[in-house]
Amino acid sequence: NTDYTILLDKSSPFDESKIRILDELVSAFANNPENLNVYNIYCHNQLGQQANHILTSLKLDPDFWRNVEMILEKSQSTPTKFFALQVLDEIVRVSEISMALKILRIAGKHFLIKKRKELEICLDISYETG
Image 1 (cartoon, helix red, strand yellow):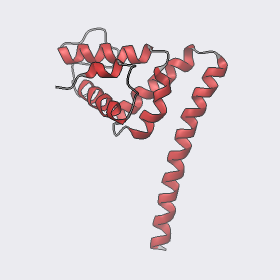
Image 2: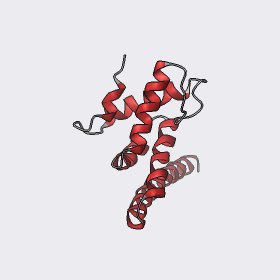
Image 3: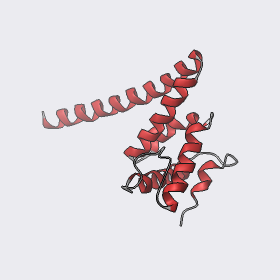
Image 4: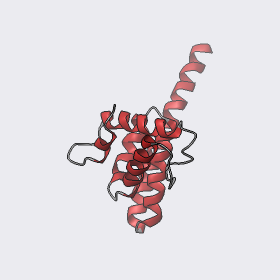
């Protein structure tokens, strides 16, 4: 069994191993039909309750947003990326304007990098077939 509480441990850096654990936790939570969403007040099983506690704690952590860019780049899970965007949304909603702009810049950078890579792939394919 995975110790999901490692995600709350600030004494070790938030790295790719923690992203894999986050992917696993979000996936297990999202794939359980009893858990309607990450912020459900009542979860029917122990994993759901633990996931709810950990994911809510991460979302409310005022410094966790700093990991969002890495999560968006390294996560293999769409639900995890959605969770990361929810973290950004929450911090932008409650932050002062200068902080919100910095956060939006990070999110915009990730989006532009992804679109550039997609365009490069399309161009490579068109040159190969053309």
